[in-house]
Length: 284
Ligand SMILES: [Zn+2]
Figure: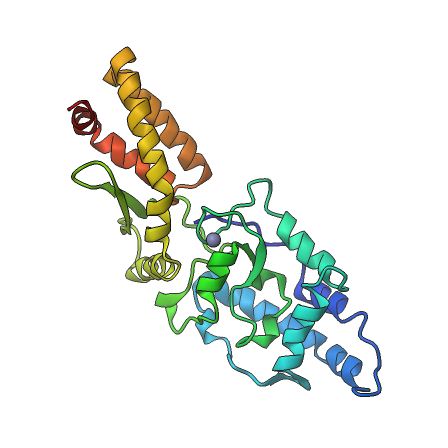
């Protein structure tokens, strides 16, 4: 989908800032000390994550731990919700930095279609408390993808989502569009580049199916297909099919430069691949 730069913020920097304003309270006199006691463990866990993620081995990390050291799962989840995700929280500056490190496009890396507006825990916080505020596990995403992913966890190399910080699928075309027989609707599916392993294809398929991208892309492409019909018919009438093809190739190039595997580039390619038949059908 879209490759993102790994935020230049370590887990320990993030965690220590988040817990920096924990007060010694009568009800929980040891909370601050307990939080501080696992800082090194949070650091160690991040190293393990960074070691496993590029190898698609995140399913090997321990999940559903009830506590990290003396800090419970529930307490760690609250470090994120109360001490990072809230606007006045001590760790909110980290939240904001992660959200702004990806340039001006602000497109959700999972679907490549909707703008991002929230942070998704790549490994869900409820099942992986050690990574609740670890930046390499926090992905700017749209709320729809965040919701579709919910608490899914990988169980093998075949069912990881595409990780925006560690995976790069942008050099391979693996989403294709197909026009229906009446040239009035587009459907999307995955295809396997020749150099891909079965595991790579399985992961892409998992990502595509779980996030319901076929339905999403078909919806987005409907308007564009209607526009292209008018534009291409008119252009062919005035300038001929060769200029129309050139125009479409430029559009494909521009769409590919932004995202090879979203709905636009595959749509333009599908039209290009059947341009004479497409134009002939429109002229009938
Ligand atoms: Zn999305």
